[in-house]
Every structure is written in structure tokens, then in C-alpha cells.
Image (cartoon, rainbow, N blue to C red; front, top):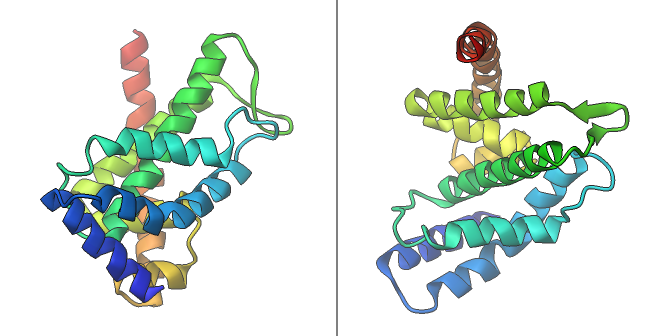
Length: 194
């Protein structure tokens, strides 16, 4: 896996530099991991979802294609974290669209995505973006764990830290996210609806 991580990082730099054919090479390098990420995400979605993992990967890549050269990629973790965030936004957008169309969206049998839950997903993304401003690695750990489905040892290898550091980051960031979402979001929502 370490060789793949370095290959992706090198390829991202070549994409940023505008090297011809670098985007195609990047897609070859990352497709299997993006497909795996999409599979993990889709297993957490409702049964009979209208999006399939392959479609989700394609949508992610299409959304990022325009930005690939403009972003100064730090490493493969930076790329995969952005892909995970993009997947999350695509699924949330898809669910909100279905709700507006009057379709009952089930996340799991008996658990429907209501407008309130849709707001929760947006709040989670906002809190994660806020966390990233002061704890980038912690936010990356959360994304890799929740959205990419990587194990703690895979995250540690990707970020070049110890598994103990990953565990500590995950625990502290989960606590911070819970606190941020419970303390700031309900008040904001009440103000917005007033």
C-alpha cells in the first residue's frame, strides 16, 4: 500500500504541474480505492438506492476533474479526504432532491431520511469543515474512518503516524464534533426559522 500512496502523491503533483496524461494515470491509480470507498458508503445507505457505487465514483471524479490542476495537493490523503467529502455531499444532495420530489428516503429499513436528518448531515459536514481549520489531521482521520472505511492501521500508514495517534485523534475529534453539533446547531436552526 505504501508504494501506491507514493505513486498517487507523485501523480497528483504531476497533475498540478499540468503534465499531459497525468489525469488519466491518476484515475488508473485511484479508481480501485475510490470504488472501495463508494462501496463502503453505499453499504451505509438505504437498500435499493438509486445510485450505484460506480455512478458515485464517476460523479466524484467529474466534480473534481475541473479542480484537479488548481489544487496544490499535499499527498494522497488530502486527495482521498476531498473525495470522501465529495461523496458525502453527492449523497446528501441526492437525498435532499428525492425528499423535495416527495419520495420517502429510507437510510435503513424503518429509518427514513427526514428533512431533519438531512439537516443533520449538513451540520455534520459543517462541523467537520470547522474542525479541519484547526485540526486538519484529525478531520482527515474522521473522513478516512467514516467515509472511506479505512481501518486504523490503514489510516496510520496513509498519514505516516502511529495507530495510537489515530485512535487518540478519532476519540478527541468525535467528542469535539458531538459537542459542536449539539451546542451550536440547534440555536442556529431556531434563529434561521424565526
